[in-house]
Length: 300
Image (tube, one colour):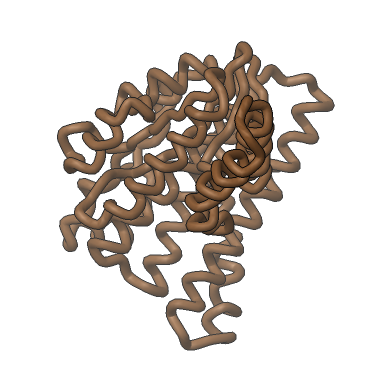
């Protein structure tokens, strides 16, 4: 029986699962990339299964929302520790891969506090751009038809209005972000970002476009950006978003404070007390990261 909020027990449990599967994975393929992918999948599947088992127990025993979330975070964190360890066994981490991986794990970890919130909120689906587009066209068409002008003028107005829409590739515009939820009558559309580097121009332009569409849709639509790094660790692309008027940007501890405001759970405090990466990872991984000067990236 796994203790669902005992970090050490959980880490050892996931290690035993990974050790059991690693030999067969190594025998099945000599491609270290495939080995890494397979061992990650094994650990993730076991993490999902463990959470499902915990939720069944929670429903039967009527655990509080906060206790359930605490268990989800412990299970997820323990799986991350072991995922990093065993990926490193088959494909040792270099700088870019490790820095990117730590950032990739951060987003779904933060989102758990919204999936199992202490305060009341509702996860929602993002709007479909094709439906948004048709609604805008319909309203504009009705307005043009209502004007006190002759038929030829109306046809000309419809034609000129259609030109920019013909230039838009609707299939290329996705309004889905990392997280969408509703609370107190407001829809929040959120993106999580580990940090902004020199190659973020395309992503920045997309975020500006998406946020501008949300702003047009409804005054009750808000777009939020949560950034793992401190503001001074990011480049000018973050400032572009912050100064645009379309995004409310929260970095580092400010991001955790805002999440706390929405979810009622202090993730910053939880991480301070439980996410002691350097103490929790294996000696093998610790020495590898130390030799590669990568320990500094073990921070959330």
